[in-house]
Amino acid sequence: MSNRKLLTVSSPIYISAYRRQQRIYFLLLMPILCWFLVIYLYPILGMFLRSLFDPALTAKHYAHFLEVTVYQKVLINTTKLALLVAFCTLILGYPVAYLLATVRPRMANLLMFLVLLPFWMSILVRSFAWVILLGRSGVINSVLLNLGIIENPLPLMYNWFGVTLGMVHILLPFMILPMSSVMKGIDRNLMLAAQNLGAGPIQTFFRVFFPLSLPGVIAGSLLVFIIALGFFITPTLLGGTKNMTIAMLIETQVNALLNWGFASALSVILLSSTLIILLIGARFTKLERIYGDASK
Picture (cartoon, rainbow, N blue to C red):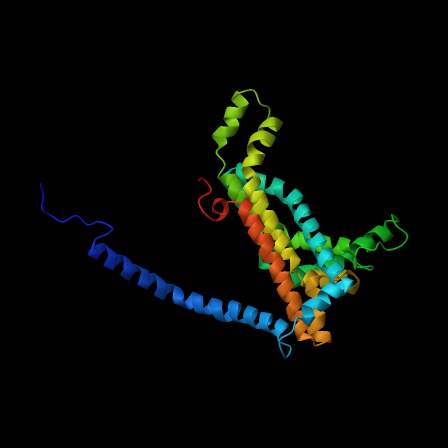
């Protein structure tokens, strides 16, 4: 029997090497941690403190939000808009994600290029493009008037229709990408087994493929919903002040009324609502299916 000492996880050599490796990892992460603290945590902490100290310790800003029903309606309307946008992107994005996961690699690469193409263009530019298309003298109304289909311009802007259309166009890739990631990890042998057992294409889809794609559906819907809650540029350009969202209300409090304390309180309420929704969604979604190995 060999007298050589075996290296185990409890041996001093192993522990020393492990600690040295952990110190190296920590040093490598220091730049991004400092960046995260300065760019994210410090402003959020300052916003939270400003909502409570204006200038002394007070809860008047949160009480004001609860007392004035208009502000609560703005938050409710923003939530409804985010839900509508998430639903529309799901309906439009699911077939595209399905194609990305089932077609040949060459075609899938082409489709993925088309999905990612809007990211190369600014959100502001895309929103202004919708202004040109949907305006009273825009492309759509001009074409319909010249063809004699309508007598008066259609109200396509400065309402929830225009806002929803613009936001769906911008947020659609955020729905497609998580769903396609999950769909690519679905074992195709399961569909073949269902067909061999007598299931038709529709039954196979709804009873096998769709349930397995639900983690991607939930993750994409959650991502789009959270982004839509804080969307600002598109609702401002296409909705106007008559269709105010919580982000537009915060901007008004800061730039027009200079009420930084109440604006900070609104931001904390929006952030808290978003975190609660994110935690609830993460509770029912296996995030490793989207951001890790999809085959697990």
